Amino acid sequence: MPRGCRLLLAHPPVEMSELRMTGSTDPFHDERIRAAQAGGNVLLVRSRMIVPRMDYNCPAASPITDCPPSEGSWSRVVFEDYACSAEAINELAALNTPSR
Image 1 (cartoon, rainbow, N blue to C red):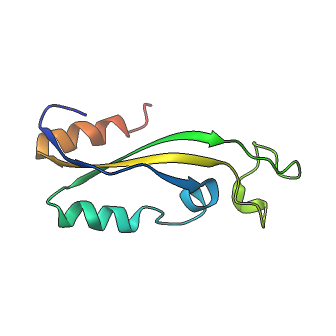
Image 2: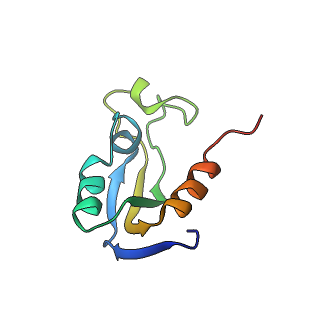
């Protein structure tokens, strides 16, 4: 995280399915609300796969939403709430801007 960001809280790890993390239009809505209620304006989501896809009818190259009823892989996820200055938010936004 850039200077200007202060960690407010690192939540205990949770296990989440690939379907929950990528199959929803707003998969971390509740966590963003929780961060805002704690005074944060940035939610960092760290994930590490713990169980790969086990469904042979759903190759890794396929979107998990194309593979019902599979949940896909499972990951251990940690949410971190940060309070960041406007400058730090601009710096983070620049990281997500595609290069031409």
